[in-house]
Length: 229
Ligand code: DX5
Ligand code: ZN
Image (cartoon, rainbow, N blue to C red; front, side):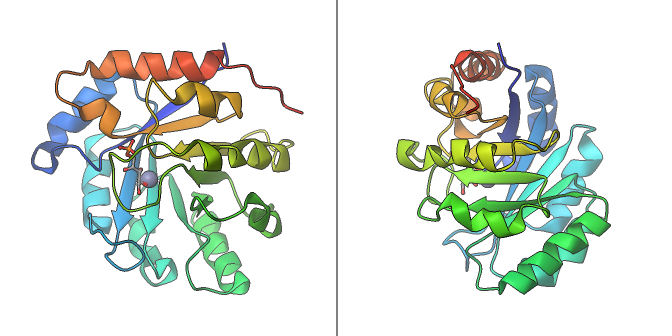
């Protein structure tokens, strides 16, 4: 079985009890936390900013990935770097030039953090080729960014395999599937060679056993047949 990581997205968790949420996720065996930052402009929803990321950082030693769904990541970058998270990813679709995106990725790397780009469902994987030397992770969106709890889109998931092929020579590169990933859909993204399953609402539904869901996602994705060529 391939070893697949689970990154827990707290977007649909109880924000009034983040301490308990984080403890529960640690006990459930998640490998990383995934923090969805939304600005009400790039996406039609608002979540939280760098201060909450810093607060979560103080709660845990788990690696933390920040997923910026904001129009101007460069403008707020220092504050997210100061929040102490391990990786910072922003969207390819922001209205910034290629030069601007390269510069932002370089600032993230210079701060010693993993730098990532996320691609929305309608963005082709080939746009990432120009950034091959800049990236330590890619997030492939399997829902339209903006809300937790949406249905998994199987079509865009196929880009995971393209991204894997593009970065195959990179030992520590990771490709994350984000949106609608659960024990029911993990086999699909596992079959495309995903390294990290981002799981949100499936971990927080009433009556669900969070630890069991984490195990089942890892099992379903890890057992899926993936042919690297
Ligand atoms: C969507 C976010 C996702 C999402 C994951 O814009 O980037 O991380 O909240 O949650 P589920 O698993 O509920 O789709
Ligand atoms: Zn996300």
